[in-house]
Image (cartoon, rainbow, N blue to C red):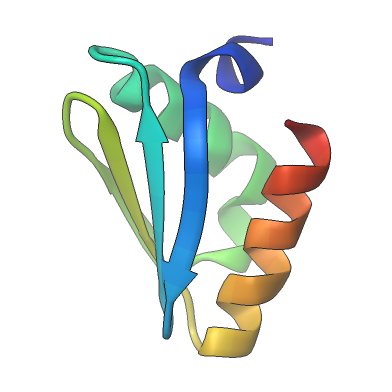
Length: 72
């Protein structure tokens, strides 16, 4: 799966999640993340090697980070 091979790290602070990817892979990984976890996030934004996800609360961020880490 492209998402698993693209992601280098996942972390969160408050209701924001930061996913670091290999260079040039953030956009593709973000689309995959939206497909898998879109119902758990308010929105996402991808740059070249970083994805920012906004959730409703810190608790939602922790749950989502745990789910992402479980598939990595």
